[in-house]
Length: 351
Image 1 (cartoon, rainbow, N blue to C red):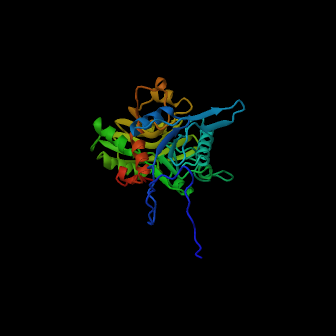
Image 2: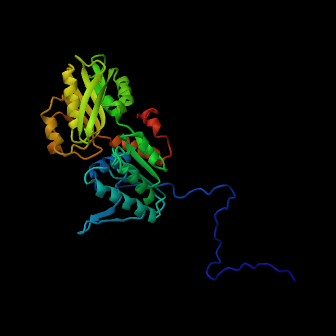
């Protein structure tokens, strides 16, 4: 008597049904294909809309609110299971609320089974607090990095960090972008290029970036040496390089109260600079800085829209360039597992 397994057909399922062919390869093809979904926090809705429009997608629906006791609530209003999720939140005011909101969005996406979570942070919060400058200080940028990773982010995408070592605070990939090509293109378009122009570094830490920018616009190079007696105070000691009878272009990563910037402009004017132009990736303009710049000797200012700027407060000498195209292209390359540095010709780590 032979033993074996007898296969019987359940009643009602006697019909011939085709079965998918079983393969014995190293992988099973993924069906359906990868999905890109983008959500935005409450920090910069306008930029999120521009990026989504360039990507050809609609922003995902997410519920964000602040309770009466100040706590933040977050909930995704659609399924994100298995999706490649990009969360846009920039480090503008209110900074602490935006940081916590991003952490909640990341953890909610992780608990909702998103396949990969990328935190898109055009302005990385607390970036200037990247080391212990005095005893008994925190390294706040490191703590923010730890929070983002602990919440469950798989990747961080940011732009023009204050210092390169912030990338080392993470154990997950950090894709760094720079707005330098946008500024160089704008200055070339308005004719500020050549021997009559000098690229000025506001301090020693930005010298490499200023040299690269000088190469982009075929200009000379100079550097400002200064001391900082307090957080928002600066004293210019000397300027290395020829600026007399030239158009000086000063580039920085962020403009806050404007005290440092106005001191640089005054020093360049004293050294005989014919005109002074200024650009910075992040225009925070805190403490009424926009009013001070409107009455200053600055011939022109350029910033990007990594943080929202109220057009009603925008002075006539301020131009805002959008980074939505750059961010959209970078997001698409991350989604497609293509190179990010290739977008910038391999020069996106200018520290």
